[in-house]
Length: 309
Image 1 (tube, one colour):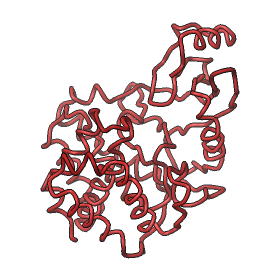
Image 2: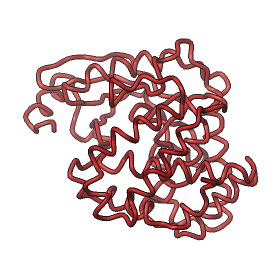
Image 3: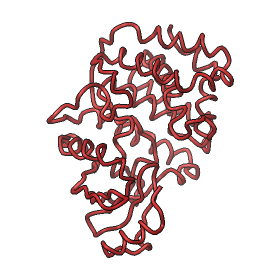
């Protein structure tokens, strides 16, 4: 957490008013810097991750993508804080507006949403990052096979969350073993860049509601099965249950119609994996709303019935 005193000194040093505040995410506070750049404030512990992220952004070849992508111009160490000066991407957050869309507008956004997601998978990297995950959670997991990476990550994460999930998820151990078995077979599909946190709040849209930019690579950015992003784009689309199950199912059907019925099982597999893997992302004691969301997914028998394992 950045204290008010530290924040005030930094803003004064860089001649930025508190009125220039644009927003706050899980990791950074964002301020208007000039017409082409923003300034972000991070905790000092984020410095090494930011260096990796800067190199990653510089390695992206976005010639086949029709949206703006992030860029870190500079990383600066200050006392008690790290700041970055980054590319400013024009656009607003669409998340809250979606609940007011009529059927036609929402359907149009679904099309734009899926099209943007699939275009990200065409991004080529000039320099491939080491392993499967850009920012590694567990340094001892170095497998270059996608399924083995997911299996080992699941086993490690389970040591942190099983005491909570055993309490709140029916037949948790049986369900966990089903997922582990699914990832025991070597992965034979294609590899592509995976954003890993693709949902409306990480998209910027123009005045016409068209997606103009994609932000916040990093936390779950991977190099693996592109269907992982597709799965998260579905389950994270309505994270706060503002649209309802019927509209969410409409998006899933649109995905299946475009990519084939055979993807339905894999999409549910990745949703269930992510529900365990992210259960303690925002609360180490699994006591927040995201954990409850994870539990709800893991107790959804429709999701388990969709698996072919």
